[in-house]
Amino acid sequence: MAKEIIYGIRAVMEAIQGGRDIERVLISENLKGNLAKELQDLIREKDITFKKVKPERIDWATKNNHQGVVAYLPPVEYHNIEKVVEDLLEQGKEPFVLILDGITDVRNFGAIARTAECAGVDAIVLPEKGSVSVTSDAIKTSAGALFRVPVCREKNLYYVLRHLKDRKFTIAAASEKGDIDYRKADYKGAVALIMGAEDKGVSGQLLKLADAHVSIPIRGEIGSLNVSVAAGVLIYEVLRHRD
Image (cartoon, rainbow, N blue to C red):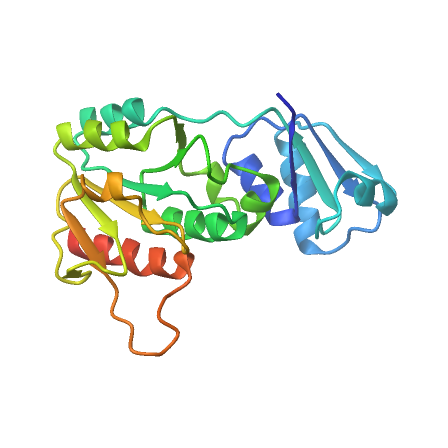
């Protein structure tokens, strides 16, 4: 399995602060400023191998907006949702799980993960096929949130939902055709929120397992929200009900 590359000052700092194993960091000789100093102090504090290199070396490592910093990590290790849930239940918590069904845009994924971390979501679940994965672009867009929220990659989301229902989760699925206004659904207790791709929505198989099909009222003429925006609205509505 190939090594992971992350880039950008804040993304690398979040990886270090989040306890990720960093093999080495390349820093451009031209990198200056307070944030650059903060990064280098953190690298030295954690005794991470780093090297100052010419800017062209960073450009060679990635064509993205790297801000003069690239870090190399071992391959991403995904979590198992059943274990994550059992651990949380044993701690007496009521888990909040976010399930992303068929979302393929890495920037949407990163933005959703950032919101999820801010709202205290306990885990994000992805299907193995037909979905985004944790990549350097997703990590940067998430501002490092993907290092702080357990991400689970499962073969079959249907069986994941069956397991969650057995654990007394309330399953809410976002749907443009949903018959329940998102503000009127019951999100108390353990909750799983399903978000689908913008073009297809949540699959029919998963909709059948949902306890509620929730929709966000649209007043304009475009007809739909970007999935990361919709996820933000729904995630914080769940949080509001649980506070």
